[in-house]
Every structure is written in structure tokens, then in C-alpha cells.
Image (cartoon, rainbow, N blue to C red; front, side):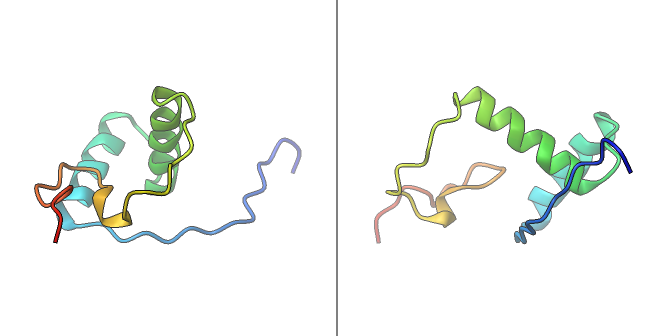
Length: 76
């Protein structure tokens, strides 16, 4: 299999129903072959848009999502 890309790492994520619906809607409109391919493409685009910025380590994982989280940024 020449030219094949080796993907040795597995990443598991949890999405809300609305996030999954948004992903699938984008995936189908962009004619992506799979959810994994769509996620890789969106990740690549997001990193490029941010100039490949490295996370500063100050935010919690709950503050990141596909859709706006109204609770994000609130101090408890």
C-alpha cells in the first residue's frame, strides 16, 4: 500500500447531540467520507486559523466545544 497514511494514535472524544448534528451537517455539505475525516479537516482548519497556537494550559476542557457554551468562562 504505497502512499498510505499511518495513523497510530487513537483519540476518543465525547460530543453533545447538537455538536454531533453540526459535525454531520458540515461533513455532508463538504462531502467528507467519514466523521473521522471531517474532524481531521476541521482540526487542521482550526489550527491553521489560529496560527498553530499552543494552548496556554489555563482553560478547562469544558470551555472548549463546537458550539458556544454559555456557562464557559463563569467562575464557580
